[in-house]
Image (tube, rainbow, N blue to C red):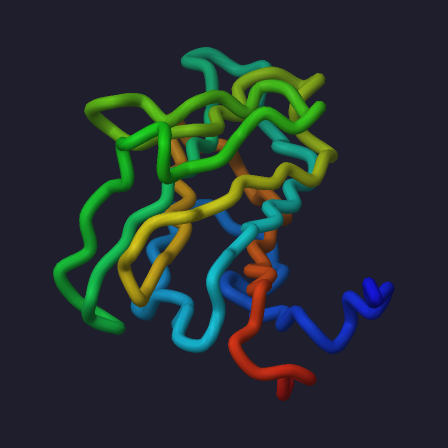
Amino acid sequence: MATRDLHSHIKAVQHLAAAAYTTTQTPSSGVDLRGFDSAEFLIGIGAVTSISGSPQSTWTFKLQDSDSESSNFSDVTDSSIVLVGSAKSPVAAPNSSTGVFLTIDADTEDLNTYRVGYVGSKRYVRCVATAANSPGSTPLYVVALLGHAALAPTAD
């Protein structure tokens, strides 16, 4: 019998605390996927204060993975490992050289929550938020949802 209990089979991990950021954010540690077979990153972004300025301010996002918790991270550039395609624009397949899958560079793109999945084989994954051209104080956060737990119910 199918269960409708999602709560006992996922784990939410705060990856980048909700705050107003002005510079690039590279988490020192990746999210540990041990015991889970899937990961979905939720990226919430508030109003980019100087998005219409010149030069144009932007935030870009990419995933990096590693077998080590806090070192040897590499950009994830393989489109078969980064899952995109939700209804939210401008999420796209990762750039094959930089790994960037999301660029916020227009005022119609801020004030949203975006999502991207990871199906790679590395144990640790992190999401890097890169600021360019002084985007000003921008509220954002990143939460990882880990799914398909090996053991359920999952612990917080």
